[in-house]
Length: 134
Image 1 (spheres, rainbow, N blue to C red):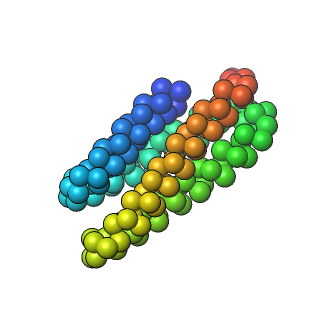
Image 2: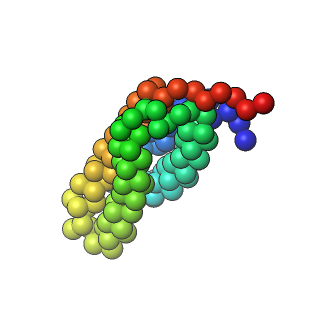
Image 3: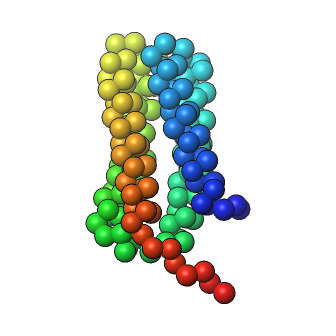
């Protein structure tokens, strides 16, 4: 389904760009585009994770040391972390008083996503490529 060395960076950049658009539309209070962009971001994130896993199959990630454990933990927390701003976003749609909580949870989710991306890049750079299978 394509080369993960090409498609992972492509979808990672797309996901980050979509996240930026989510933040902008959220800050501007543009609810409908914000929701559409959230859904698009989550779809892009799922594809990014798929290609990250395919890329991981090409490297000796255990050879990267503890950064692999740190990255995998952060990636799981970041992925699950999207549930909190989703829930608070639904709460905010019903009662605007939840908007500050939604904002804080969204920023935390964004920070976790950036940390997972940075540690993922570090992990791959610290890993040796595996020999291709004949």
